[in-house]
Image (cartoon, rainbow, N blue to C red; front, side, top):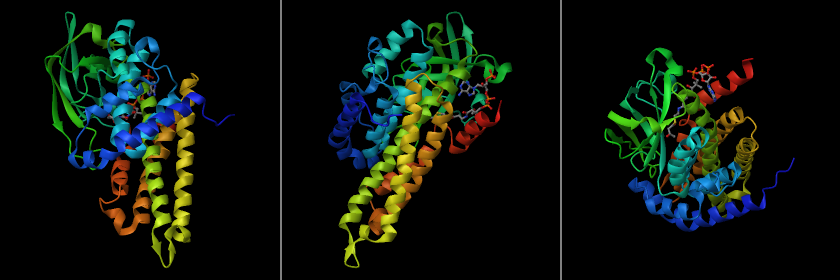
Amino acid sequence: MNFLLTEEQEMIRKMVRDFANKEVAPSAAERDEEERFDRAIFDKMAELGLTGIPWPEEYGGIGADYMSYVIAVEELSRVCASTGVTLSAHTSLAGWPIYKFGNEEQKQTYLRALAEGTKIGAYGLTEPGSGSDAAAMKTTAVLDGDHYVLNGSKIFITNGGIADIYVVFAVTDPSARHKGVTAFIVDADTPGFSVGKKEQKLGIRSSPTTTIIFEDCRVPVANRLGAEGEGFKVAMMTLDGGRNGIAAQAVGIAQGALDASIEYAKERKQFGKSIGAQQGIAFKIADMATKIEASRLLTYQAAWKESEGLSYGKESAMSKLLAGDTAMEVTVEAVQVFGGYGYTKEYPVERYMRDAKITQIYEGTNEIQRLVISKMLLTD
Ligand code: CAA
């Protein structure tokens, strides 16, 4: 077993860290305050090839592995969790299902545009009445000649409104529950497609989250992703990888909070010495670092397994569960290390704490991760 990163992975980490520090970090607090997505940052990520890390060059990607991808999400999230999730949803939730289930034409048209970063991707599964119970969705798709007519709405869409391409799920056979779900690729400029309410959120505020609405939205049959009735499998398999992207985001948030805490613990003096030289804070730092390292190893293991073609669904659920809980714990502790200052916007740790919470909720709550893991362990 070798825990060393390859030269390529190290190079990607260095490149993304430099980019994150120079181009993303300086505006992170302001974008959070203003709830403002900055397309220019996404465009720069595209120039660096970050929008297509795991996709082959023939589809516009850079042909690197999933480890390199999670490293990129981690490094972005270390300074700005919103930028981290923009890339994660774009890659794992929109690019991945097209790469795995798309035909050659769909890959050349849609995956290429996503990989090259000329277009942004999003994923629409959740509905007002179906969150954890994803198969209970109500959005319908009715075949009419060479189109499907979609009606319904999806909520909590990461990259909603800024995305050009949406991978969405709708019911083609209402009598068949999950076996009646079909996946589609929907262009944002399709008549009948519109973007609804933008959520005002606790955290990841510079990543837009919206409702999307389908009103007699005519999607060409050519945009069906996979076979009719295969959509629930597409949705679940997509989330298997997506959850590891969120784990990487959580690791990055926690690491950012730890880095800030270490710096502060060395500088801040009370009782005649730095607070880091006092056991109450020193032990907190040790616990924070240990939990982050465990989360990182699980996240990298799941990514490595995916790159090796091994099954990774259980590990991905585990990595999201551990890393999400860790990010929450570590960021709460980071605020504590900073004391009163941590509670103000003078330092970034309150933002990290607000951003961490969503990692325990989206792409399946951590309760759903426990369900997924236990089912795999207990079902023959
Ligand atoms: N891979 C492949 N197939 C899978 C699978 C997987 N990971 N998980 C389930 N399936 C298949 C099962 O094998 C089964 O297939 P058969 O009928 O052929 O046997 C079928 O799917 C149904 O499986 P279940 O009976 O286990 O399904 P369920 O209805 O009980 O639901 C669940 C299982 C795990 C709870 C699922 O509903 C789930 O993951 N819920 C959470 C949804 C979620 O994560 N939502 C987040 C949305 S994205 C988001 O957060 C927004 C964003 O933009 C970031």
